[in-house]
Amino acid sequence: MTAIEVAGLRKAYGERIAVRDVSFSVAEGEIFGLLGPNGAGKSTTVECVAGLRQPSGGSVRVFGHDPVRERAAVTARLGVQLQDSQVQANLRVREALRLQASFYPDPADPDELLEILGLTRQAGVRFGKLSGGQRQRLSIALALVGQPDVAILDELTTGLDPAARRDTWDLIAAVRDRGVTILLVTHFMDEAERLCDRVAVIDAGRVVACDSPSMLTTRVDAGQRIRFVPSQPLDERELAGLPGIESATRQGEEFLVVGDGEALSVLTAHLARRGVLAHRLRVEQASLDDAYLALTAHAPAAQAS
Ligand code: ADP
Image 1: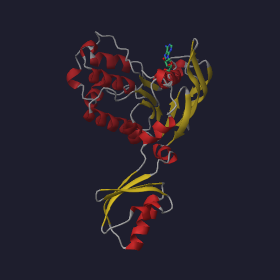
Image 2: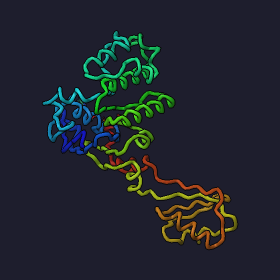
Image 3: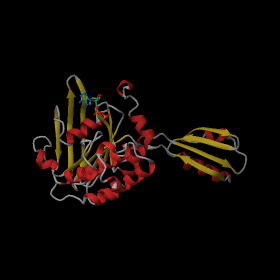
Image 4: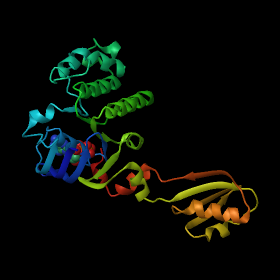
């Protein structure tokens, strides 16, 4: 079953086109990521999915409903965490969460959620007095307290320290395991790799790639870099002539071999034939970072902020 369907989405703010042509669909129970440089149109896209903005063109459906025209049907099933959480400064943490819970038919226990997010000690603190990381965690709690079927999380772990990031990832993975569909905007490759089943890379208002993190990495075949120390003298020119190997250089006792996706098998077969052992063998693969940079290489720098 499809939870979110975005087809040919376009959104202009006056002259400025924030989203040119974005299409993707998210299956129920999936964690779907939107990745892309600043100004690419990610937030505008999720705001359209959340029914907070009216698209200029194309269509958005959440469980078959139009988020703007059938707002009530959608908001009952949707939890949203946006970059700037809209909480009144004088509202206390627990009050804010209880208020949010009151809009939903079957909410989670606010105190339990505070405990999970490490905010129990701040339950009586006014929003205006919270630190950046605490506000961030409260905004996640606000998105989840309604036990929504779909959660939209924009910049989930921005401003959190490494331990809090990891706890948040575990929390999101647990939420997904309960069947919740998650649409996640992120800048962080490690977050996308760790959490997302699929990601759409958005650049200048268009989807430039949509796949699982591992398939995206494979598609941008940045090849392999192999380092090793041979057990006996070896001529690097001999290695550089092997099929699929672009270069072989020696740095002290260590060899660096650069080649395509087959380079490691070609190299190890060759070394085996020669009776040479490869000590301290390390292979560096292309990462999602490389894939992302390759896919968004033409992003206009002027839009970065
Ligand atoms: P991202 O989330 O990928 O950083 P946004 O969706 O926030 O991108 O923004 C996409 C583009 O739309 C940017 O150029 C931004 O300046 C512009 N934009 C976003 N919101 C507004 C707005 N309310 N009014 C005018 N322009 C906007």
